[in-house]
Length: 367
Length: 80
Image 1 (cartoon, chains in turn brown, green):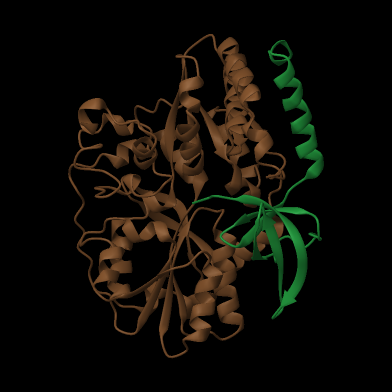
Image 2 (cartoon, chains in turn blue, red):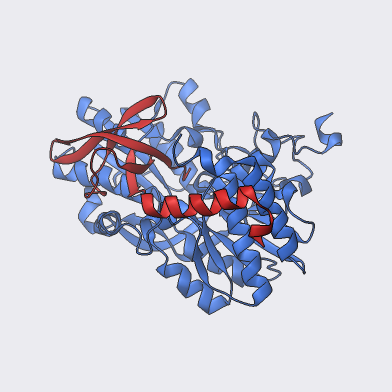
């Protein structure tokens, strides 16, 4: 397909890898922020094409993985409320909550439906005026315009039985949090291409300047990723700390103004708890006062939520780039995509699931 | 989750006051909300995420990148 195939060219990829090997004279640690990039890197073996002195660590950019346990448990409580149709992206159904996952809840009779788009959830609400339809609104800035549009249309058209359980997260505060973490090893970032398609580069320029780190906004195909790594390594070698746009075909410097206006019409910035990481100030969105009537967190009083996290799971360390999935004693043994202990083993973009899917299981674990 | 797929806009319509259009991804088409890419016309490529276009692809930027990449594919020397 146009704009995809040419960025999967094997010869270009090998030449880029050779250029990275020539450019890197010292050890460097880079983090790809977005889970989609992690998935591509492991799928195409990009990390294995790099010289030994260039290490990639995987970032927290998987919204399914970082949605807090409290929020998952809240989703369960709402989904089992009589009369509710609970709608969600498919990945969320298998994320372990304190009392199992949504898929199990569905097999026990709850009306839980997978939708491709939040706009489809509004359509379900229009067709079922006697039912309360809730959409689990998760995602980074990439997904925020679509989720905002769904709530905006529900309000505009008086679809009063539609509400959204919002657990949106934002990338720049997470990058700042990683850089402030004691023991941080990350020296440069591959920035999240699709997040920046919406938000633009400005917030990343602030981070690059404040923390003196190079950030190369990068696409998702193998050639994009290798090009992004090369640009980042060159900056580090030359002592530069700038924002570069590797993904200019999709990302304008100012992002998408119309999409951002829609997002800020509907959402306010709030502190948000990230699973495995903890609370990060001003790192999420919630519906603002004008959309209170569609806010599932306000509409459904689910009482006190007592959470229970698996003690074996190290996904918090994986999400902050401090450990690799294969460092976890449970990886590929007690924890597999069929019976995940943590969310990073659930989503295709979680580092653990990507390692498992593409055969990065230690021999002892797979036997 | 932040998966975005480039597709070609086949038509542009108003549906209940919302700008939508059919977008083709290889052999598959589906309806996409085009409300946030107001300048888009038939034949343009848009980046689609969860049924919603988040940006219009810039053919000039794409051509520029492509040209550089093809040069690189030809000669490793041109790369350092």
